[in-house]
Length: 325
Image 1 (cartoon, rainbow, N blue to C red):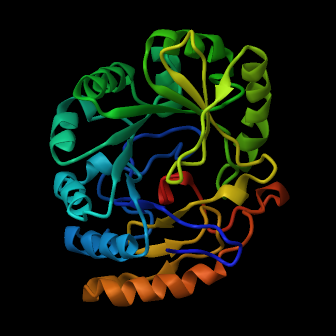
Image 2: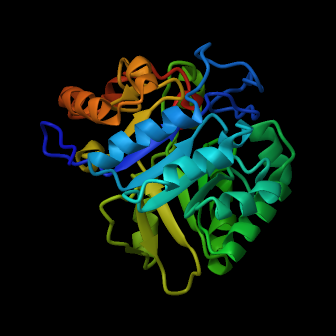
């Protein structure tokens, strides 16, 4: 089992398969990074290389793998990538995060490939506001894809980044929506990155304020599983859905960290806001998952206690598309 010097164990791998995204979200890539142009200028890991990474992490106790981007559906070989992860019998849960752009036409194929869970980014339930935030008039596609995922029995979560000037006024609408919709709606605090200093200053909302309101109105916290993500989830008997809160600026947020990240080009990031990624591409390409696992175990000793976001430190993360947040 992977364990760092602070006693934290790592059951969860967030594996980026591309740093390219076709959206222009105002909090991440307002200028856009379209198809074919990598932020890092390198080709992403191949299917075989992804399989090597997964075998290495699985041998170290990883139980959950999430494919992230950029936007994973831009990979034409996404189904083989999903199958490569699912081929490991030690991986209990296979997830993906998507903006939902191609979801209605692809979710059935992902499900057949073994997908267990999907996180869909829906930052507004108002079509015009959704368009303004993302640069695309595709809310209907995201919602229809979500509906199909639920029909297939895929565990569905919806991600909404809290933005004071753009969607914070929709809080009541979001809550009304999950009264009848059986999804976990996860409110994510806007995080400061290298490229969004001014935007962060005018739009950051503390998730703990929402948490206080939820508890006051009778919401109760769900017990976390050991491979759960960073959200603290709440349920209410009058609601079909749940609320999750990801609050990286809250006290002791990093104490429960259970996840590591590998970039689309094969760099191990011990934290989303680490000041560097460790380049493993050459070792991954060699295909020796045992040697790779031993190398990962050595690197994990360098993981720090916290992310230092409170001090304005953003590390090497210029924007969230680099590692999928």
